Image (cartoon, rainbow, N blue to C red):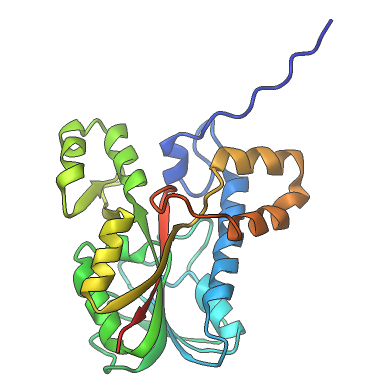
Length: 266
């Protein structure tokens, strides 16, 4: 009697992708989110300035990016929105970042910071997708950055936004997406976020006076591929991360989140 080879795991549902804890019913992505965090950490480590710098972290008070920047020798100011504490990063709980100076304030206006006062800005955990008037927030980031300073940001992709709209049967909204300048997406928990194509994100940054260095998906490897590989070989995580970091970018819009790096002109 011949054994039947196990089927390749099916592509995860959008419900499991928006449940970043990896506990969606019948569809766990815990291994993928472990991989996702490892990739994010490695991408940040590659991106951070090589010399000690003043870094503004707007990622929401979860401590991962602020921790890494402080651990790399940078002076970090970590801004926490009081009404958004606790949301954003897979599995992370809000906690003080070791070595960072915490500040409770509006991460959308930055009115408490003077012009050209920081060398780098990190806006991880999709914080700019939760600020629906993203143009105003990007303009504030440009204002507080010194000329030549850089920003690293993560937003919801149009791929994720369209999947969420389809999941909730918003077909009229979906038909408007190709011509829409702004795509706002309602989530099942009542929140609204903004999704971006790579073109929209590039235009947003250029209009604020940034030179875009690159835009890429957070991960090119699919969740089902990562889950399959790590289920077979848990020790393959470092190899998967290296593969991700060295992957050729054929389509900037793939993936649930887009990552961008830009430099303030001037």
